[in-house]
Length: 107
Image (spheres, helix red, strand yellow):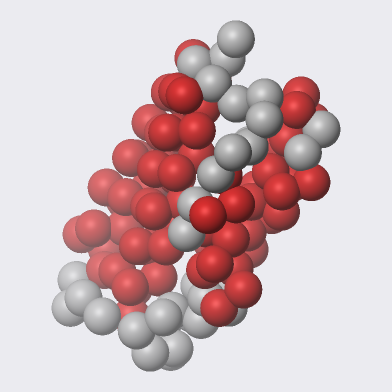
């Protein structure tokens, strides 16, 4: 995601990439349903910052939105489910796939 932000020169994409990293870094199973995700990070990851973002292909925008949704799902997997190890690796795999799809969508 940092590569995409650098290519487009978008401050919003820099924030989006930082939010994805922070969400993963700050996961805390002791937190309730939000998994410790700061509301400001959740807003950034909601995808609203991607609306009308210049310089993105449709494939890149879709991949970024998918990555944000998966990232937001990860904390709930740890804090709510009885078996977080069952879903977390699968979500991580899907996140990797979303990033790979975004890289393939480059102009």
